[in-house]
Amino acid sequence: MAIGSKELASVELDTFDNGRLFDELKKAKEELFNLRFQSATGQLESHGRLRAVKRDIARIYTVLRERELGIRATPVAVEAPAQADKKTEKKTKKAKAAEESSTDDAAAEATPTKEA
Image (cartoon, rainbow, N blue to C red; front, side, top):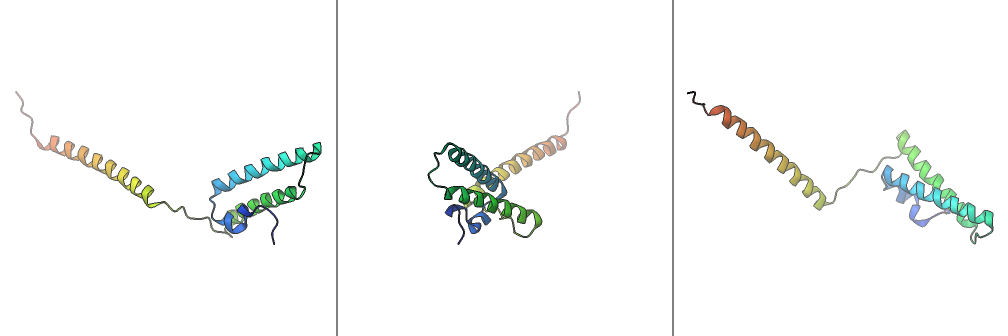
């Protein structure tokens, strides 16, 4: 049984993208700093928490390194259906604007101009 945070189990870390892993790593390092400071001043209540945070940090580093080496797969970003619809709407609006501008250009070229 692994000692550490229950929300940072290796199965849970597999679902995180690299950006979120770096955020979790930063939080864990800050927590470790605070715990060490409390330990030095004699205010630390739970010494086991130090060990758990160190293991969380090691677990995050392991997942990042395995992804770098290609041992562990990086999760594919799955978009929510609402977000996917918004992106297609934006693309269609851009496509419509491009079509309108191209048809306006074609229409301007097709009409002869009268010279006086």
